[in-house]
Amino acid sequence: MKKREKLMEDIWKTYHPKLQVYLKQLFPNTREIEDRVSEILLKVFDQIDRYDSKFALSTWIYRIARNSQIDEIRKITFKSVELLEDTISTDETPEDIFFKDLDQEEVKNIISKLTPEERELIYLYFYEELNYREINEITEVPIGTLKYRMSCSKQKIKSMMLRSGSYEK
Image 1 (cartoon, helix red, strand yellow):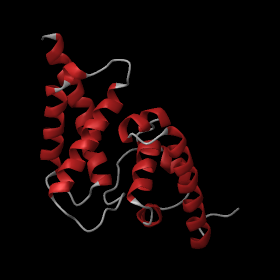
Image 2 (image 1 turned 120 degrees about the horizontal axis):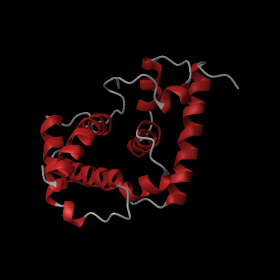
Image 3 (image 1 turned 90 degrees about the vertical axis):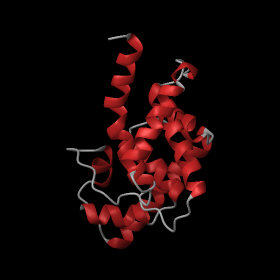
Image 4 (image 1 turned 90 degrees about the horizontal axis):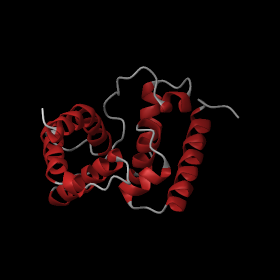
């Protein structure tokens, strides 16, 4: 197998499931997620020669996915975006640790009240375990702004948890 074909196969195996979750979480009203992910990965393969190895491959792929989805959304209007519409099936995610003993419905309820930008940041940081530099490369939001937004998002979540009685000081 040629080196390029092996790279494409590895990218497909690694990022196909991750992009499905990413699109479902950030853009749950998108129809035919499977088709969108396939289209995005084809864009990745078409543009692989443009990839700059000084950046992480994952952030480059997520940026293509994000921009591609934003372009698609501009064509289609939808009413609302909720982050945790589907349950992510993993043993323990960073968000599980962050929310400790909260049940899944409570987590969904709290996160659904965040803005789309806050949900995206929480998803990329906690689920994908990306650092601020990688999130900056995907969203093109300055790192200082990302840190500020994360701090505000955490405070907002903590406040909602305190109000719901699911978190004690």
